[in-house]
Image (cartoon, rainbow, N blue to C red):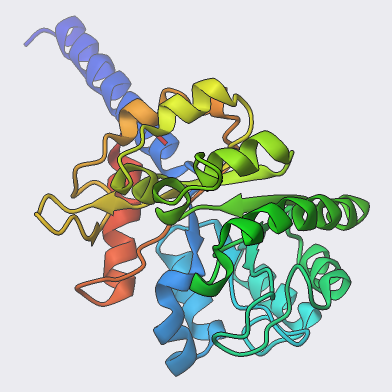
Length: 290
């Protein structure tokens, strides 16, 4: 090979290598979040310090809290928890809470109990969003949903004063039940201005097309839960990239939806949860979407 040909080939290979490195860097630069509920058992057994360190090592940059109660995040004050996050290069941009209307699983802080403290502590750890995570089975009557509209409105004002955005996270029952002939999810979208955290798995499980909602209510879905659906008759939870949900098609509508942050979540894992969330983030890094 002549020197000129060798140099040209070398430069070409170098360019390709640089392109590959840039592509890899771009993939790794994706800001992927994790809903910590996925690791609830590990947190209880091993402590939040150990688990957040493990989460950060896997490449997650953001987390979504759950289980705040009695002024504590995973048994830590807002100051203590903030330090653990900072030490691991993580930010808690969102957090789940409950309405606190139901004592079905014990008393908890939430929308109707110690709400000001819930909001203040959420702001103290750096949250931008505070999300109503779930309605207990005994608070899903038609009158409960109608009351929830007013509660969300009042709760939203308190959140705004603290610089937070109030949102609502869905499961499947908001689509399968009816309130005066309409889906509870539609009732909340039409009668409140809270933002929605779209749990893509549960929407698809309920037979809905998330993109239809993105088109009908543009900008209302700043947060998503990214979890996959197994290709089995049971359609159970699966690691992202191993199931049947077309995330590429959904992320094409991210701008219309108003997406700002998304979180991996796997409610139930068939393998150790840390392994599951590693599989999920690895697939997201390799994907063209996200």
